[in-house]
Length: 388
Image 1 (spheres, rainbow, N blue to C red):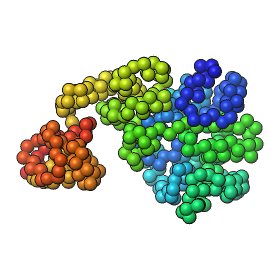
Image 2: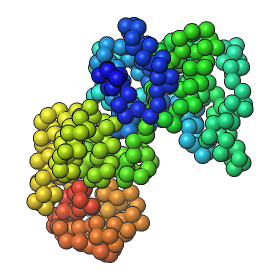
Image 3: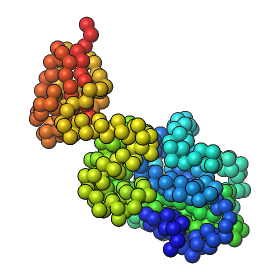
Image 4: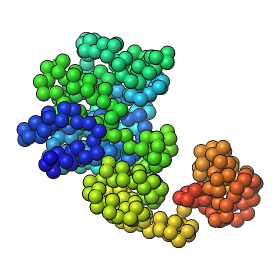
């Protein structure tokens, strides 16, 4: 396998069909490489970057990168892996989320070499005849063959007609763009392969090659990285938070992050001490999104807090709203935890400190002077008295 192909297949789940990929690469043609993302949330995270990094590999090889923002399909929402109907998003929610996408993507891709397209461009014009023609390209039986739809149908859970439309709409994107290769997570395999079939139905002889990528586990090492599971590392996290979150992952997960998020030689990584390897991984990723200086400062801050067990000099302040507050209320109102139950659970685990002293149960906090509130190993906030 030549070096070009090695870079492309590194970390992939499947290449379908592999022989057609080799043929397309050997043609010398500037290939159209497509990735579609629906703006269903404002922030991208390292899980999204697994696929975007693969786009960068193709971009560095001189191919045409198409970053497709599904502003039309976001109104439906991808049903892949869902056990229930998604709530319908409003146009305003979609617009807010779109604003942040380009800036985050261009932390990885080169803006001047990337074509950003919105699929409303063709779906707003397709008309009822176009939709009817598109829906005739698939069957109910074909849709119910999907694992997620089949499971919901078996469990007598509702499946809306509009959800059946989603894979067809995603497939039509590949027709509109005449894509040579489409990338996606391995949970997207059905949709991506349908795109290949629909292209043929619309007369495209050389249908797209499908490349699927594994779903990246979050910092817990169990569930997929997601804001819903609070195990994500956002592309716009601060250097300090990004560095700290990466240092918190397990050694086993670290090697997977190396494979999917970097181009570093894996044999060289395995020869390093795990702690040194993890530090280098954190430095590598933070530098990618925040520059060399950001990575240096993040490491210095991490070493100061965790290696020497010191409290950081600079931290956010929260002004008490009352003279006295219950600790669980303070933790929630200051934004340190999401709920009182979470606060009490952390206390029982020894994860809450005031001025470095562990607090194992809820009590009333009397705020007459400043103090440092700490949650876990990485979250600090300076609590200051209320102004009278």
